Image 1 (tube, rainbow, N blue to C red):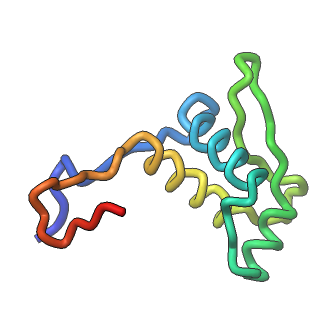
Image 2 (image 1 turned 90 degrees about the horizontal axis):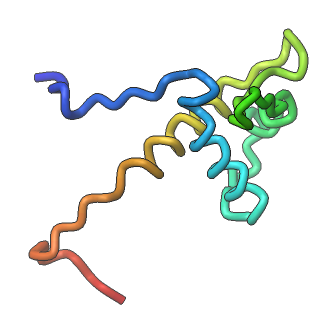
Length: 100
């Protein structure tokens, strides 16, 4: 019936809070590891994003123009941030676990 406190993770939408996820996402995109599936909305939003740096070299996605939308890119950066800081749980005694 809902979420407990352990199921909710916070990502602060500040330069410091977003930078590690943005940096890792940018590296994955440049390495060709991210495929948006030729999604026209994502392509449009990516075209609206510029990276802004603060005085500590943290990066944050911002709009190129005030009318542009970047929400899916920000959502992806937040998800990427959570993915890199939350290692997947591996259950060694899982009968469905296959190691290749």
